Image (cartoon, rainbow, N blue to C red; front, side, top):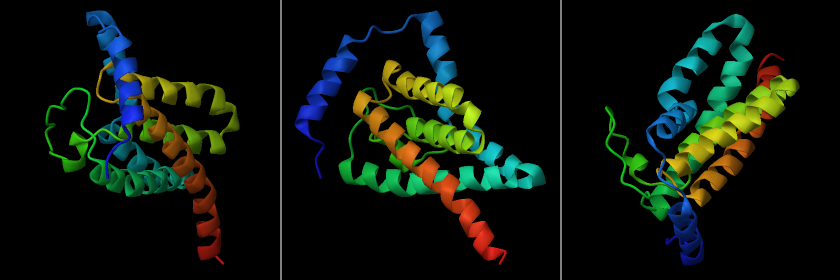
Length: 176
């Protein structure tokens, strides 16, 4: 399957119009982008699951992550869209990370924001803007195109809301 040329052209225009961040601004965006790292969220999920008072929240976040990856990985392999700037290999090679569509950072940050906000509704005004900042950081740092981030946000919202809704229902059903 091929990525649509019209979206690719628009993405190239948007990315090309962005200034390359200077040192201080680049550092800011690199710190913001950490909010989407699986290497950070994985231990958070586990810590929440182990702590009895937060077990449900941890299970919801982990379920959202699993749902997100179940959608993201096949999409990346079917479209094989290259990143705006090639990704340097990390310490542990993850094959699907060489492709950009959709953004896993945008997906992860948004699904976490959705799960948190469902459990703590007063967090919506904070959690959603933080997730959007993480998504935009990926575009500014030229790791993703705008459409990668937008689709990551939409998928993250869907996966987060679905997990936050279904996990308590499944747990209730198991305890009956």
